[in-house]
Image 1 (cartoon, one colour):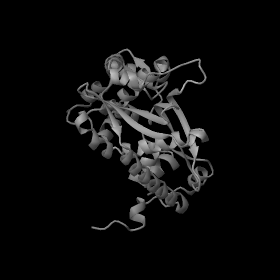
Image 2 (spheres, rainbow, N blue to C red):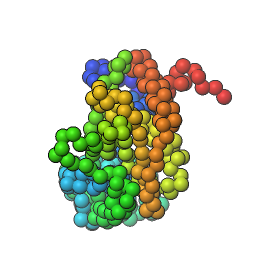
Image 3 (cartoon, rainbow, N blue to C red):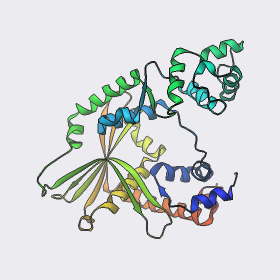
Length: 328
């Protein structure tokens, strides 16, 4: 692992708040966390399912900000593999037009990504990149290299949002109650940014929560998180473990708890996943009190692991390996 003491000093001189994704990255691979957040060499993730999920979130909770958050290209966006080539090319050229990019830049990037190498001639490989749709995408990339979608993707996402909006259980759950009556027992919060300090830790937490409701009558807080999945809802329990969504639920629950007024700290916090799968099936998963209690214990263990890494500045191995708890 490459260590940069100057960048370490710069990183630790500033306040840091863990998001679910950054904490998850640290638990999975401290060396990758070091690369992404301390060295600031985070790679851009190109995954159409992640992009579609972000668009659906925006359409459902912040439809008025769609054009602010996403750039819509007139043609089709490239495949994920071609996108990787285009992003790789950005390192070697500042040409505003794809036609102006030198041939060797395209060929070197194709070789680095290992794409179209079975084609016999360089001209054939270059032609695969210099297409009309790729040229449109490149033009948008030169202005903003993130959050670019095509009309087909946008329309697909709109159809899925319509499915969610037509689902009675989802419609009831996400009803944004607005009342002029200041004693209304229910308040709702959509796309809420929350952060909190953590006692005895040199870092805090932060995150955007899709939707949560505070009910003063029942003394309950219900947090909703929307998930789109390329698998079936029948596999979602496994997906929760695979992607550590339990950690996200625990982080969000902690954030909401810490941001509640003192007189509401005794409210029961519940968590629900709203899931739409690739087969357009919609289901709301309730997280049991027992599961959430277990996940909060696991969050404490995760924060202790993070504390060890921050205190020792050792990011070579995951915490359980550093303290030699892993045996065969």
